[in-house]
Image (cartoon, rainbow, N blue to C red; front, side, top):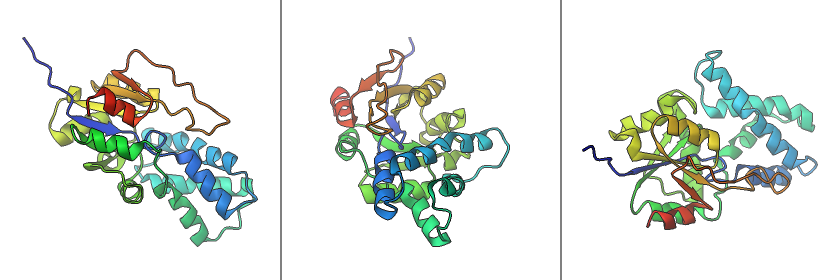
Length: 234
């Protein structure tokens, strides 16, 4: 009889799952540039995220850090919002808003509880410096910061999910991805990972409430990270 080892590693998607990228960018842009539609700006910036990473996934360009991709998208959208005049220092500061994203209200408490039973790590397309600065500012208690940068591949490339198992020398079944995005979870599950879906209905703002219906394919479904900790007995 083959015994299945229990889940020991929890890895977390970050943007939208652990931190509120939309609300954070809206708050900062509204403060710095009150004349700009900050909601539209945040959504436009995020809209360039997948196409930029796809250029890397397809081999059109070599691997570059997400900071560089974010900057390219930013430079493209600034004229659309009347900000083409921004100097280099202003652009660089604004681009680093991704390092300053605020955690969802439940994140620190939920992660702290989950850490009592599991090894917890980020598994984000964000680069290591970005994730470390974010964790320092927001108080995110990671045991380890893992990033696409470690594996030189962006999710949903299997190298990212399988790479976690290699890093910790465990089977993929002993790793669970926690995320607010079903496509991320689908890709992880295809690599043999367990999956937990976190509801984040306001990820894109109150005017674009997400459908957070359960998917039976996921191992767990939780309202937030504290609820996940409750379910996992932490």
